[in-house]
Image 1: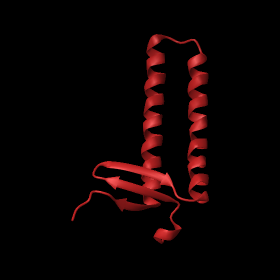
Image 2 (image 1 turned 45 degrees about the vertical axis):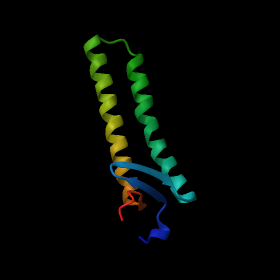
Image 3 (image 1 turned 90 degrees about the horizontal axis):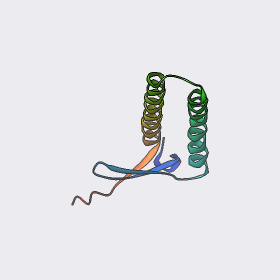
Image 4 (image 1 turned 180 degrees about the vertical axis):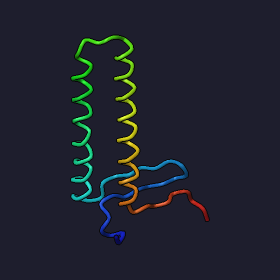
Length: 92
């Protein structure tokens, strides 16, 4: 994929990264990633509304946190692969 066609742009300075949508396609793909988050949140809200023991509640919360971390990690990797990366470290 050519840099001009990539839907995201990543500004990188050392370990710090800032990935932003670059065009309409980038915003559309970002919206799809956010839409994929909705079932996870709805399921968590539904499960937490059920009466359960404190141990089960802890399992539900830990499962939700693990799902959120996996979702965020995969989204970052996916967007980074489709980003034009601009290095701002200032090495000369």
